[in-house]
Length: 405
Image (tube, rainbow, N blue to C red; front, top):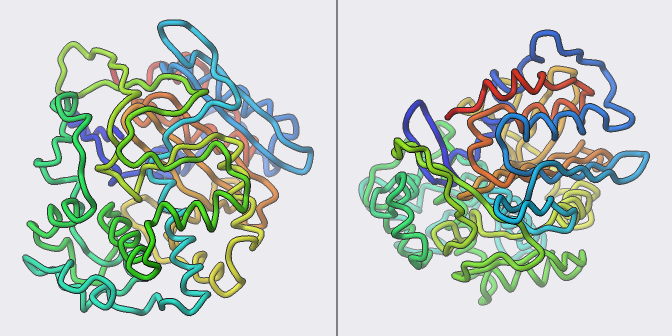
């Protein structure tokens, strides 16, 4: 993902940024002149307008799928490929980024339901000696604290040795990283805070969570996700690529820019080795598969009631703004119209995705933008407001002026 703060760009999973959709600037209030009815748009007219506005604002292509009482709606705009000009197709696959965290949290909670582990277990019980160094201590961190980002473990994506800082990433896009190496990068630094004393979004926590899954089951976390989630739900478009750099067909292309490039050149970043994100960000899927997963999760098809209650028990996530809290692999956001939605966002190089649903699973929205610079705009926030609140997006002229050149 490309995270931009002022003039600084970092390709990282760390700020999956509900910030780009649920921050004060994005969702705290409707734009001036935009209506905000109390009920969602019955014909997805405003959602269609938000998809079009994202493209008018500079996003190459958008895929969206919504489901409500009237059925399933598909919306696309722009192009999936800047060279061929092929339009996005509803079945296209894309990288979900940190939405992967919802999958791994589900697997860990399933293991708890089976009595294989407890979320109160210290990390040290499952990964002895792994979380140690410069003040880190796995004996003081619980599995629950990994899942709700209260562990204080340092985020390895901030370490320069990962080469995710700006244009230098191009020379390292095919590097292979093992999970143990990623955690070791984090252990070179001091914790962000003492366990349980604060909140901070950290990719390292979900790498550790998947390592625990592997230790508890004796199988790879990928095999467990496939056995427990992908196959039972028929998620045939969903894969875990490991070190493979390509996205299976059908798929479009993915585009990025680098803040340290004065020419602001657009790069096709579709192919790269995602092992630096591993369990915290590697899932490839389609809007249909992601929608099916969300519905099954919220309806209790994947977790017993006790574990689903744990997943949706939240702590404040102050870094992501007012109106939202963090559960276990899932966020709760209260929109300006009063509607409460649950889900996650995700960034990877060239891709921004979102997947949100009402708590009963009856109203859902999944979308992908085939660039990470959509995160420089409020495009995702306007899409959520359009679908769940019926809020009209800004005019194309206003949306275009929001794009960072």
